[in-house]
Image (cartoon, rainbow, N blue to C red; front, side, top):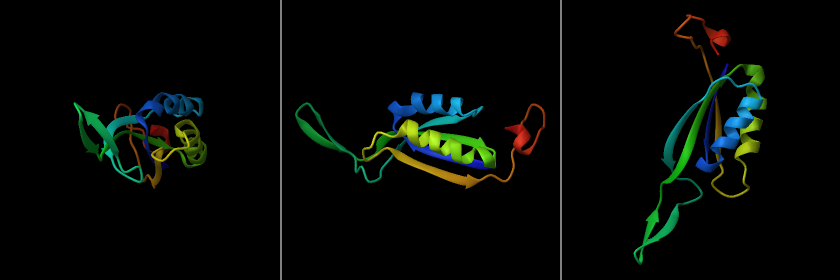
Amino acid sequence: MKLIVAIIRPHRLQEVKEALSDTGVAGLTVTDVRGAGRQKGQVERYRGSEYSIDLLAKSKIEVAVADEQCETTVEAIRKAAHTGEIGDGKVFILPLEDSMRIRTGERGEDSL
């Protein structure tokens, strides 16, 4: 099993959710996060004053999938989140040792 963690632009979240649903991903967790990378923030103006926003709003998606689903899931996220601009995000793929469904006690891929 793999845990896929994707950091994406918030306005691309709906497209990514739909793409994941189309690939058969049953569940996901979404968290609103802030971060900095190559995008280096933005300069905003408020009442004539300039100020720098160096931590930008992003959405973090976490999905647990079976090994054979990993590449199709990652590719679905990449295609749905892609705008071609700096700041599109990152996808991290981590090994997932085990999981358990609390309601039934099922473990491993059966719990997904």
